[in-house]
Length: 78
Image (cartoon, rainbow, N blue to C red):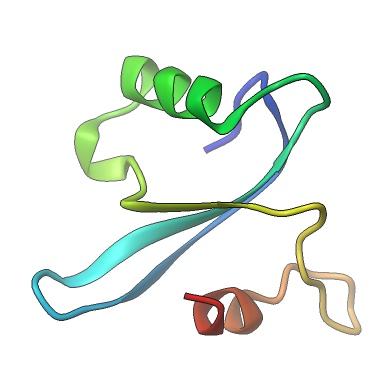
């Protein structure tokens, strides 16, 4: 889920009582862009089932000691 408005994106599945799991996105925006612009881009260019249910704009993605995105931290943030 990368677009022209984003620097970095991480999408994870988290537990949801209604649906079992739902997609949640951590997004680092490029300067001058908004979350609404990212959402509009996603709705125009992606299938609905691939669009996150939750969104969180962050200044940077959490990384582990190997400099990989730490999805455990992301999952625990929701």
